Amino acid sequence: MGANETFFTRAKLSIPGGVNSPVRAYGSVGGTPRFLVSASGAYVTDAEGRDYVDLVSSWGPAILGHAHPDVVKAVQDAAARGLSFGASTPGETELAELIRERISVTQQDGSEQRGVEKLRLVSTGTEATMTAIRLARGATGRDLLVKFAGHYHGHSDALLAESGSGVATLAMPGSAGVTAATAAQTLVLPYNDLDAVRETFAQHGDRIAAVIVEAASANMGVVPPARGFNRALSRITRENGALLILDEVLTGFRVGSAGWWGLEASRVVPDGAGWQPDLYTFGKVIGGGMPLAALGGRADIMDLLAPLGPVYQAGTLSGNPVAVAAGIATLRAADAAVYERLNATADRLAEGVSAALAAEGVEHSVQRAGNLFSFAFSPVPLRNYVDAKAQQTFRYPPFFHAMLDAGVNLPPSVFEAWFVSAAHDDAAVSRILDAAPAAARAAAAAHPAA
Ligand code: PLP
Image 1 (cartoon, rainbow, N blue to C red):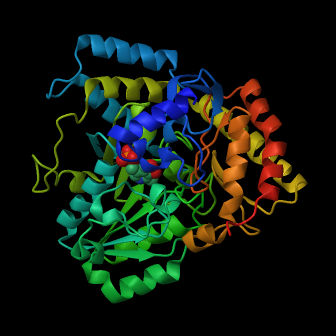
Image 2: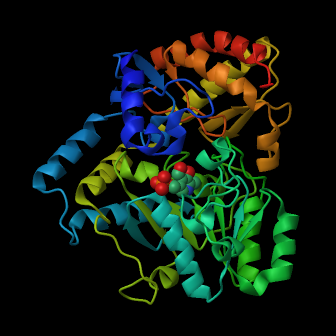
Image 3: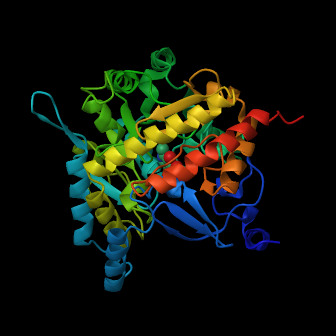
């Protein structure tokens, strides 16, 4: 028995399923999860001493590559000054200012469009979205929430209905333990379907507190918003007195300096200009690999949070100084050159792997949202969760394992995005592209389970 298997067997005795987050268990791809002991740049190393080019990137945060020297130094310096104070620190304001500066775009007429007026730091994306919803309900005095099927916003009760990510991977409709009353307050609509949104507002408009949407969805594989979709959501919510919560936990600071909203607002993505959500949620990259997330947006809404307002939210570790130091170092290093590099690497990988699949006659669609991408085993591009579930998912496990055998660590689920980092150099990209033909052959030879 190898070390990975030994660790997994032992973990299962003390930890449910042997993991602290379900997708790590390899449930949908089979086999033994790799237990990782270190990571550097574009590579992770497992308990057996094998290294892999990593396309999980800690599910997003490792945008600069693992253990980037600036980030490690910032963390070490901060840790030496104390791990947690339970009081305010100068770093929290510095990070908030940095984010406010970044979530703004210069319009063609030279004017500045600012997305985040105020920001609160929390520890996980789940907390950020959960708080944003409470805030929206507090601000509007309404109870209903609209979300989209296949979108994942963390694991708070209200948001698990027809959720993406691990819930999709395990093919679960939702979660046990969520009360019927809570579930009934979440209306789940098909993504990219504005008619469904309009109909729902026509029926329940005066009871809807907020629409929450992934800025570009990446938890059912990558499924970009249809042209003008986000902008239309912002108009419909505004017309109906509801709020729009743009979940940029995954896309924020990853697809561009000002997140997906920045790409739309600055017209990198066509037909997106001139709109703004009421609230944004951030996570992943802003903590540079440490537990840190945030919600922010309109000052009049954010000021409803305690201690100024009646909506309560708090956290022992909120704005933790070590996490904040990692976030500041990461955002400072993630400059325009980093985003150019991520885009170029994503182009090379998307094209190269697609060519390998095509050469083996594997029907697939390259799903892209900026530098995020995934491959769907579908003849047509995915637009929503129904499409995502209809693909030939059985082709992914053999594809995944062929890549893993060749030293490439892909997300262990077809419903996840591939994350590149600025540390993915020619050698890392070549290893992935060299592995792709055999993986494509394995995908081509796959059959549905009997
Ligand atoms: N929102 C989105 C879009 C996410 O992708 C995730 C996590 O993958 C979350 C929220 C939840 O973040 P966390 O896992 O930090 O709770």
